[in-house]
Image 1 (cartoon, rainbow, N blue to C red):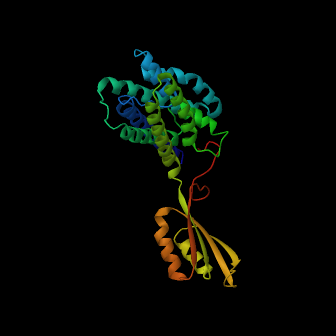
Image 2: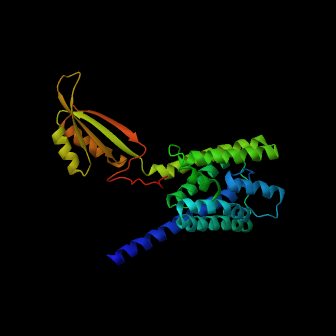
Image 3: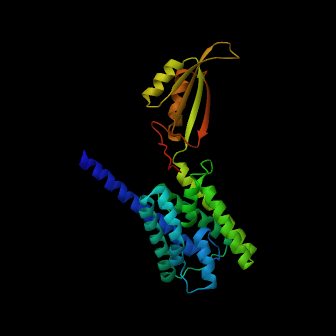
Amino acid sequence: MKKLRQRVRKSRIVKNVLLITLGSFIYAFAFDWLFIPNNIVMGGFTGFAQTLNRFVPAVPVGMTVIVLNVPLFILGIRRQGFRLLLSSVFAMAISSLLIDVLANAVAFKPIEDHLVACLFGGGMVGIAMGLLLMVGATTGGVELAARLLKYHFRHISIGKLCLVLDLSVIALYTLVFRNISDGLYAAIAMYISSLAMDAVIYGRNTSKVACIICSEGRRIQERLIELDLGVTNISAHGGYSDSEKDILICAFKPTRITELKEAIMELDNTAFVIICNADDIFGEGFAQFNLDSL
């Protein structure tokens, strides 16, 4: 049993390292390919470092990000311990290193359509940040700040928190360089980034909930259990029909919607079924909730 736990732990560590590396590469590639050549500022510390680099080209963006992140990491460790430090320092170091390496190795050319650069750049950055946050890592800066703010603003998604902080940096950039067009393009990119980030982080928890009002509640319940679907049976009284009814509540993954409908209609074709999207479900058979959840 001990050896099995060790193998599982090692497998999880390898998976996390691969996801952090992949996310860092996507982040650095999007930054060097779509943001820098098209003068689209990033939010957060990267955007601040990008602004500083415009004034002092000799100061590399990646190294500046590392220096700026040190105080924030100290605050982060107090909240989440050294697990945050190890994973995030690795992510920050890899992404910052890749930013400088790719910038020196490849001469990226501007894309003619700035809007295309914003859309794809924002999407790639959002995916990268989502992958990192899924394994408890960040590149520091806004992502880490948003991660810490999440403890106090539980009702706001991590993507929206990042968007608010990013827009603040973009506003500063716009005021400094007096370039409204670049600021607006950057705002579009960060908005797309927040949507992509939330899709990666919360999309995997998206499920559906069926509310089944029927006369054959017991038979449908048994069939759903045979299909390994959890179900709750509530006795009710139909207002229109003035008869006894059963209300079955069933949460399930979207891929199982067809077999659920077939099972219901096969046993009771007069059943009234309401199926809704559930953005977040936790509990047995679904995600587990803890205070560190995003």
